[in-house]
Length: 202
Image (cartoon, rainbow, N blue to C red):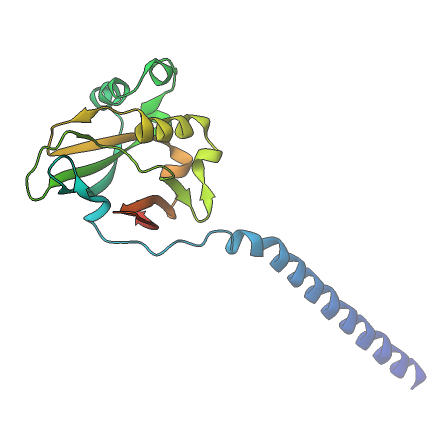
């Protein structure tokens, strides 16, 4: 009888220890997984088209000028689109020996200009300062110098045009382009009021 009781006590002790170990293991696994699971919080996105810049006192006549994004899409690079992309940038970008067709996706951002319902103002198709690609709260320009350079270029260095519509082209590394949480973070400037808005890219 003592042997049976002793065995029972040993068995119960072993069961309790096993349960504790499993709980510790489960908690440990949860701790390891939780940063990954809650690392990305996708921002609420706006619908297109959307105004990203408005100046209600534009030009000599004080007309209303509007710049809008009307469409965004990813495309695979081919020889033609690669040449078009490189033609938009300076020698710093053109001098890079990247394999665009295998390592990048081409992001095409289509924009429109209007001046009080009259098209063709002499303005640039450009980003407002601070606009760029994000995944959650991560600014991807901080992870890719090449992407940072492109974003700076299309914010400050593109020339004006009289075209009614135009595009911004960005070469986005596949590791970012294939992420379901990828968004375009826009600094929206409506007259003198600024705000952040987000556009889903996936």
